[in-house]
Length: 148
Image (tube, rainbow, N blue to C red; front, side, top):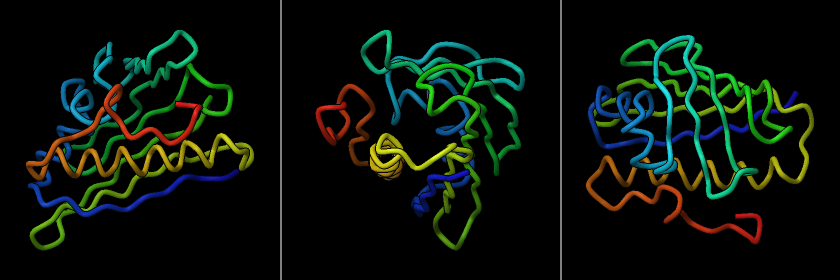
């Protein structure tokens, strides 16, 4: 199994970073503006990126304020199914460290490379939004290739 991993330091209190990763409104602020569902353990969140084949459905597996959010992908691209998305947060001086992981890819296909780049851009969108700059959630996100 293969994983996508990113680390970013955010100049914001850990509670604000947690809310951005754990709540529907928070996620709409930096990942995609098209979010449905409930962010509670056992519920599902649906994230849309402009088309019927560009959807990710995540089961909320764990919410441990203010330090951990875990989802399991239950709908979306075949390569994402059963992957686990984790946001581990910790205060470190004046910043909050976000350790992002999308674990459990069956193999490192080209789409994984694309998703790694996109997740990196979304981690910077999260950082920018919380630090007072402009976040770039879909549809205003950074375009990586014709796959966007």
